[in-house]
Length: 319
Image (tube, rainbow, N blue to C red; front, side, top):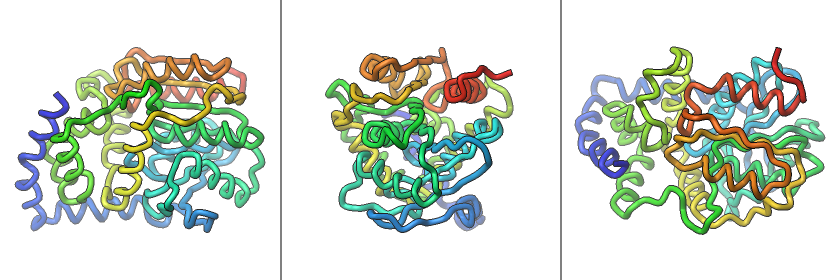
């Protein structure tokens, strides 16, 4: 089904790209640039430039974005927590937007570099959350720097815990995805012609859920999907995530002593519910929350996710 969806979408992209002359593509790119411009800072670290943004006041929480994101996706993932009174620190991982792509772009190396960011911000300890492929970096941070991590939250975690890539593509699918994910014009055409296919194939969420959630949650889905642009400034990060999420994990989950919360959805098309269960068995005393539906972007459960994370960190349920 995924293969048919991707190839069908590709079939019409050339027609959509013809809309360049109407200005639609250029308007989309301008909007993407506006969304990411002047909202972030860049810190020079041991591995080169690291882009980040900080928003809000209160207890600090670092939100590490998923595949196809950047600092702006981190802020979006943490929007409910920002409104709940947290100070959000949102970095762009290696290969995304203005962050460097060093020779060693492993989750472990990224976790070490995030210590430079905390030092720069004057933060001794912080709650760390990671979504999708960003969960690998979050887990490495807790494992390698337990004195700097007060709480660990893994959201729809993407990891190979069984020796089998949970999101394995055929050769044809890889070719199609490579084409779409390495060209702003091709990706724009795919997203314009087939937004539901983007939701299903790249965000691993059943589009039928859109009819069962609130207008606010539909808007959040649109923002996540639109936030994949500009895809051309994320190519190294996308390829890097594909490698590390598909490679048998090296993270010593069994040694993580930080209080840990793991959240996923049973119908995530990337299979992160099973990954979440396995992680809950490996990480000592980890708490596991599985929503019955919501896909890879926990559609319809953002308020629940905010409530559960807030209660986990503070020790108090929401009023």
